[in-house]
Amino acid sequence: MIGVSSDRQIADMVDRGAIAPDAPLTEGQIQPASLDLRLGSVAYRVRASFLAGQGQSVLNRLSEFEMHRIDISDRGAVLEKGCVYLVPLQESLALPGAVSAVANAKSSTGRLDLLTRVIIDGGTEFDRVPPGYTGPLYAEICPRSFSVLVRPGMRLNQIRFRQGQAVLSDPELRALHDDTPLVDGEVVIQDGLGFSVDLQPGDTDLVGFRAKPHTGVIDLDRIGHYDPTEYWEDVRSANGRIILDPGAFYILVSREAVHIPPAYAAEMAPYLAMVGEFRVHYAGFFDPGFGHAGAGGAGSRGVLEVRCHEAPFVLEHGQVVGRLVYERMSEVPQMLYGADLASNYQGQGLKLSKHFRAPA
Image (cartoon, rainbow, N blue to C red; front, side, top):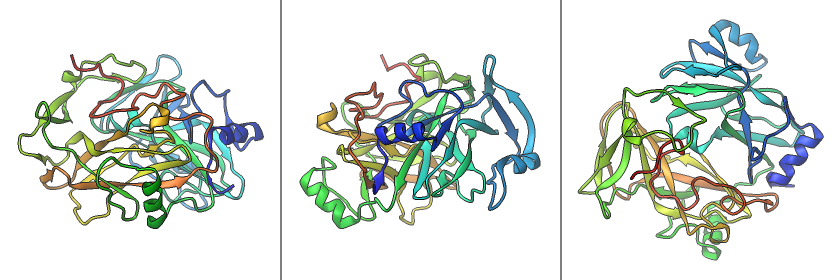
């Protein structure tokens, strides 16, 4: 069936051995249109990020780059800011010849500036699994702003399965928007659904957050635990613009409230304009039901994880910074984001990851 695999189809892939976990799946691991991937029990500190390359295995290449290995199976281990680690995942694949997959960071992972990508044997691209792949999966993890404490079974990445060409063309996307509005304001459709940044002061002049450079460790199992003021500084604007500092990491929010109808899934992609000075990155999957009225939403704004590159850059209210690429589901999922799950970000606005306490 052409389209993105649903939760029911993912469960069927597990039953048929196309997805082979080392241990039984845990509750909530299967999402409406993706599968969460779990960390294994060892982390390898490597001196550089790498891809296996055609015809080579990750473990063979690991011998070139490994500095030391860390057992995380007891009380976990700290992955230090600025270092690169490779962690075998508990799930491996034996995909049918017509099924491919794409991986991405989970939302809370991206909001911590935790760069994590999936690599495979023979892989020449990050986060891409070709049709018919049989073999293990690995997570490359590079904490950028905060050191983190990890344990086996933690879910930092997710993987989405698809068969055939499911991406909506711009005319198809316009027709879908005419039938079921996908954003609450003016629609911009070009190679997907464009969205812009919200820097317009509202009740306050708070428009975002910037990661502090020297902070404590974040235990990824602690939800609603950390004081945000110890890790983030407020970004404020009185005139609808901010200046991004090179190397700094920001949490901002989209101006548009986004809707993902139940029969569709979406993925955030960088805006392909020739701006070149910043990137909206990391977490990219939007599940069926995100922001959808029938799933308890009234439009949910996209949280933007922004890193500035070489030069300071002026970002202005309403500037287009990214696009959503919509895909058809092969069937409507049994669960929808927000309606049947304890979804952390349904109906969200500007919001840090779930690890931080809500502002007083």
